[in-house]
Image: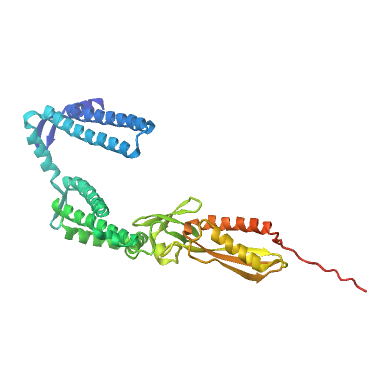
Length: 375
């Protein structure tokens, strides 16, 4: 076994029938190993720098800039080292052998119609997809920071425009990039059509969520920051993705909601058109209480609430005659639905305190039992 490995390492490399004056051992020791060592040193140094920056007092933005600078510098070093090592191995004929390797990698391994797929084509797809994603983000960023008159629209429409432009730029760049590297888009359409028949049943939920995501982006029934109730879960929408939507509940739990559910189910959106909301507080008082005074106390409490929406009138009502007392209810409007819980709690505490100061009894549940004597 060792003899076979030694013989394999000592053989000259042959590419497409042409002999290269270079053994596999020389390629590994003089080219691959130095690059791997350089990569290891980079990872080690970057880890130390990140740890040191984490202990420093620099702002997060400055830390990211330093790390980005280090990574870009390392890419330049890698490219330089690659060229130097290749020149050292192959000498003056380095260009000749690189062109030979290029021709081998460009030989078709799969042909469909007028499209031929080679190893080089597959490798070139990686930067095409990366550049398409980058182009979409860049266009979206330009729209956000440009002086275009988008701010005459409400936030939901601006969000929709930005999303649509980003997706459009990404798809357009992707199609152009695939055409440039020699892929016939008509062949791709036929291929995806055939695959779609087989995968349609298995991926129907994924496709449904994908299209539901586009419907949400276009029609905007919900927006990031809205307080909604979906599938008995109440929370704030923190991010709308293509496939799913992230909701953070009032208990700080994160739930992932499929977009198809947001389209097909009834969604309770507390902040769709207006973030103000009416809250309700209920209290029972004894039957011998001054109801007019209680009503005045409740209305005054609603106005003093720090979350109360100025310009609105509280509504205190005698709601019902209960078994143990008179049931009073207070309706008041607060500015932001996200403060619903704390606003209700504030009212309840003030109601208990004010009724106690005015010596108005809050009855507990009671049953009067009358014993009838016989004879």
